[in-house]
Image 1 (spheres, rainbow, N blue to C red):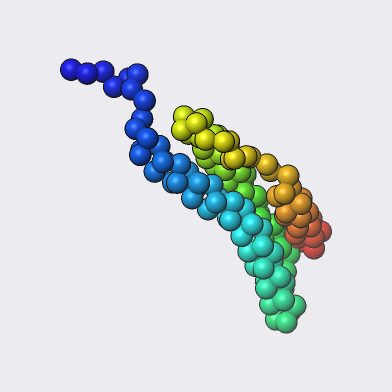
Image 2 (cartoon, rainbow, N blue to C red):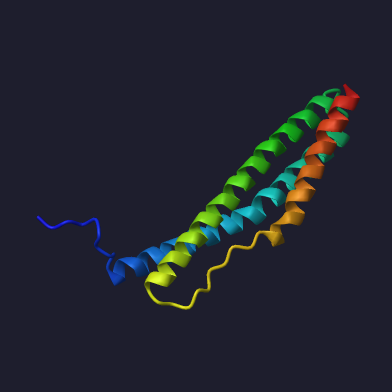
Length: 132
């Protein structure tokens, strides 16, 4: 019986894995942009509905939106970890295939959205508590 522990993956299998990891990293990155803008959209629509309906539950709605934002932030953190894992594996496969290393992990472009999301969360929670 032949041992499979020290066998290198076949070239075709590495190409398929390279493609899948590339698709996965793109999907994670797209979600990194979608999540904060979807949250801001929900926030604006909710605030517009509250203003037009003059509800007495304004503080509770703000608290709910603020805590919902915490989950959005948590999801974004998980997505960043997913992108990092996918890029790390892409780099390994590029090395195995003797390709020029083009996969890079840079998180700097998403930091402004993280900061904006954190500020929106704190404002919602802060105003929600203040209005109670």
